[in-house]
Amino acid sequence: MSAHSTETGLGGRADAISVWENEGGAPAPDMPDDQFGRRVEVDRSWTVYHVFTGVPARIDGAAMTDLSRSAATDTMLSLNVRSIERAKERNTATDNSRNRS
Picture 1 (cartoon, rainbow, N blue to C red):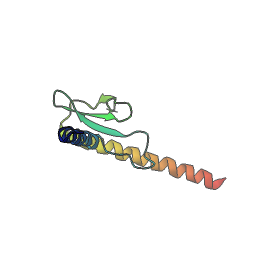
Picture 2: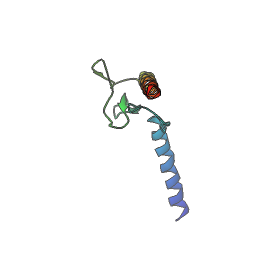
Picture 3: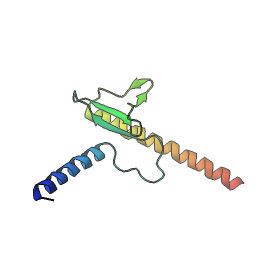
Picture 4: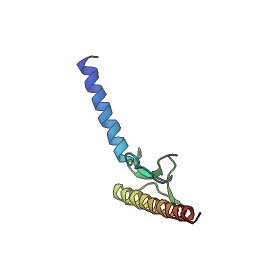
């Protein structure tokens, strides 16, 4: 492999890591099924989307598209926190039902 191709490969990896971080990074263990990321669109607006399907998130029937970067970030974080809280509640309920058995 030449020095040039190595440099190009590293640049590509840096771009991939940037995209990966922008989309929420690596999932933590026991994460809920609903994980959301944010992405910038061609028109420079931002979209919050479900990371497994790529479908824009919806809140009260409204698609989370055409957002500013800060609104997309706030929405993404809020949705992910809500999702984690629901997962904890499910896990607690499951643990309680197992303890009763």
